[in-house]
Image (tube, rainbow, N blue to C red; front, side, top):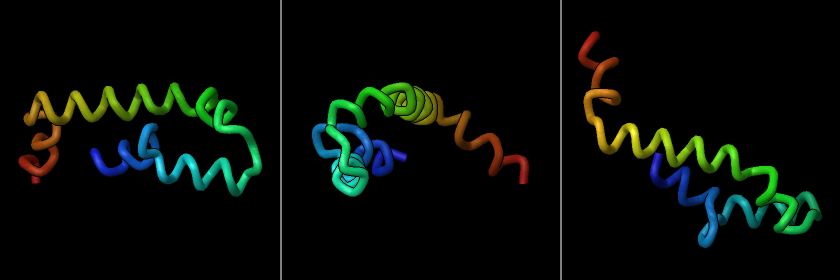
Length: 62
């Protein structure tokens, strides 16, 4: 999850840079459209890392 967030969120944002280069749009346009998803990714990442019971609930049911 951390790796996925790191590849999509600046300053590293490798996938973001490739996406705007392929789509031939400005980085500002790409960032404007991706911010809600970045916030969701970071929120889910914080939830999973700060509360391990959230990520361990489903495996414990099996």
